[in-house]
Amino acid sequence: MKIEEVTPLILSFNESPNIRDTLSRLSWASRVVVVDSFSSDKTLEILSQFPNVQVYQRRFDHFADQCNYGLEKIKTPWVLSLDADYKCPAGLASELEGLDGTKHGYFAGFKYCIFGKALRATLYPPRTILYRKASAKYERDGHAHKVTISGEKGRLGSVLLHDDRKSLAVWCASQVRYANDEAKKLAGTAKQDLGWKDRLRLWYVVAPILTLFYCLFYKALILDGWRGIYYSLQRVFAELILGLVLLDRKLRAESGDNQEFIDETGENN
Image 1: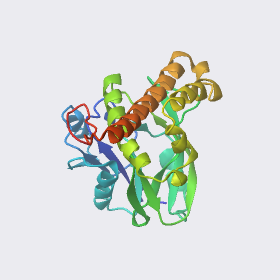
Image 2: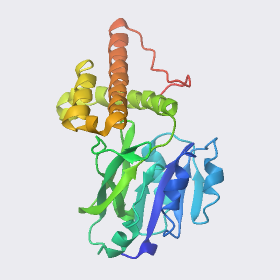
Image 3: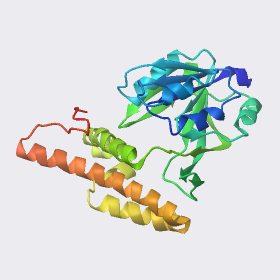
């Protein structure tokens, strides 16, 4: 695979704490496509400092739709899909050049960082980050998105860092929005069609408790000290919010209250 055949694709919205470090590791790319959702912080100013970055703005509706819009702007046969807080290792470009390109997509593992230090384990799953543009389409999956690849996939040896430096307040607000999308997904899917992890999340009280013990002891994150505890509590918070939203929907339905969940901006999700 020629490195000139690969274009990184990044979504951004108020990513000034993250985007500079992410882009500084993509100097090998002749062109980086960024789909920005009208950031109001210094994101656009930072993006303008990288000559290989081309910015397209689109009002946000869903991650999958933003990505599909970004795919339309890619001119190369291969796409490297990244979040704004993903840090690519130094050897990634060399690994890409060494690929024979016979696969239609490649997934990679991650190390999760808390305040710049990688944890020994994470609940963050491997993700397909490199794929042929012609073989890919993004679909909605609760609050998240997934790319469907029509063809065989392989695994990259490179491991990326997930290192989000935005404030805890921003992270918490995001979890409230994400929980509503996840609740809609879980409520709209037959139980037999849910994976075991999603079925577990329907246990409003049990899931957060199990998550805490799973992270701290099964994943041994307690050995990472306060950073491991911080991450574990984040995962518990996310499950608590989801449980509250699911229970809220259940109780409102039982009482005949059809009011939809309202996020912190006062807008319906």
